[in-house]
Image (cartoon, rainbow, N blue to C red; front, side):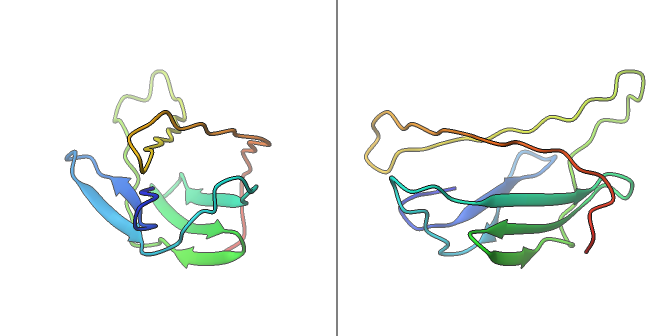
Length: 102
């Protein structure tokens, strides 16, 4: 997420970054609802909901390792401050669900 332009990004297996959502600005000082739904079986993203606005991500492939001896799920959030200062991010109520409806 880039707070300057409100764009949301995805980093692919090749290390390059692609824009997922354009101009979805998060207002500082407010709580925001974010839900990411993925399809682990087919290694695809499904959709992202930000404050009630749903974006289809079905064309996005998930990054994954071929080693199945130690399966894990890794989720990462990077916060960048618009003013190149320290940025705080508070995460609450992380849930992992299965068989999420489309």
